[in-house]
Length: 198
Image 1: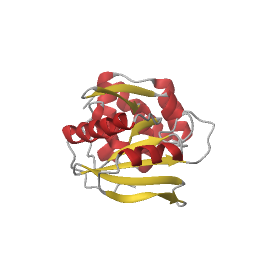
Image 2: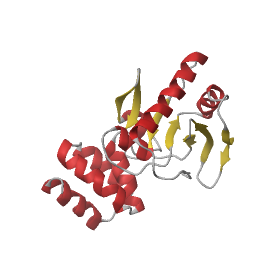
Image 3: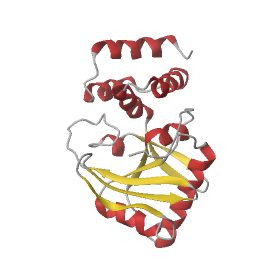
């Protein structure tokens, strides 16, 4: 949902995640989740504007497990079904950071989407957050989301980073196909990645 202002720093994101994971560890429960959204890109070194931290949960039960662990923090949106976005969603304020936990309950056969289907569960990297290793959705999936939303302030830094650091061209192609991006947008991406960072 993303109602936070896009001004979080890397330290804000890592601190909110470390606090959340410490609370989960104390609860003795281990929900299945991935970090997505612009926070996932920031954790991988891409300087994107971040307004909140997005945790994608595998099941509604996982949303409840995380919410229970965060019960000492202010609840901004109690766990509930949002039919318009097909999400089971909750939001907490974790030390001034909006932390959003949700499922996305739509079907797809593609592994190229950031929040739907097998993509986020198959295509992720582990990033160190304090004493934790956090599963973060790969940039190829995030890039396709930003291209679909036509947000150049988000996709240009992603393209620069991927051109400099490398990427999986097959995964990116599947992600763009999953979103049915037009041919001219795919050509622009190929040209930008081939020409290197600006």
